Image (cartoon, rainbow, N blue to C red):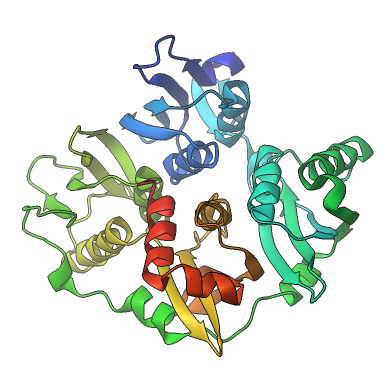
Length: 412
């Protein structure tokens, strides 16, 4: 007995272009489930326009209203959402989690290495192909040789966990070959030990523009008393409306992955949403009411804990990523940094958005790398992109920074 597999996630795809599709999730609850679901929706490029959440601490019911596009693979979206939900069995009326799903081992890491002739937009096209294959980029090292060739090293994991099979590897090879065409010189794919990927870490040195901007966050930049002005977020905390929950009322400017950033923060703080709803208004502002409780089942009344969570949320709502264009010797370098979940997962599609923005600016990438760094006791994923010298002269630094920022925030 118990809930049917097909009823865990119900997807009602919109028949009219002007209406959003509706995704309903009905499954056992766990802290961080909302974050995991929002991360999947973000990975597939879905924009959340409205959400309703309710739970009794054991079972949850979540409804997402989302916008997709003509290329959205809805059946795959549903499969991934179902896989993220805790398994449940019913015995004597008691629901419990499937312990086999807990503590699964890390996915195998593979090295995709290829050499080809360089051309504008190449890296973005390859990144797009990997995303379509559901291959997650863990690390990347891209370099250009003096004779105009590109050597790319992608350390990847497979969401489907099938990359060890011959068929999956052949499918990956065919996708890369289709993207590179006659420019491809060689292409290799092999499983590597996780320590090999760790040893391929990016440069340990980080410019102060990233480390300082990431953590020098003045409270004067944000509004704590409930008013909102322009893009400044507002968060009001109310303990009087519920005897067992703390209400967080949020009003902020919408951006791509907004709900993921909120859910990710609550997950990191081991906080559960018991009831919540939110919607995006026509003014591009979002309004959310979230009734939360701590992992011990109690409301959050400690001012120190409230202020810590409040400060973190304000940072995530104002600047979920850090973008800067700096000098690296005689060259120009783009730096993009985003916080990593405590679970070790990075933000989806960051490299995809970076390469897309640079492609739109007609900027060729000379070299690129992504690595993780510990900054002020937190883990950050840092993307570093070096440009060709002639492109640096043709496009102002401020324009590069603005275009990358707007693409990452979904404001293009």
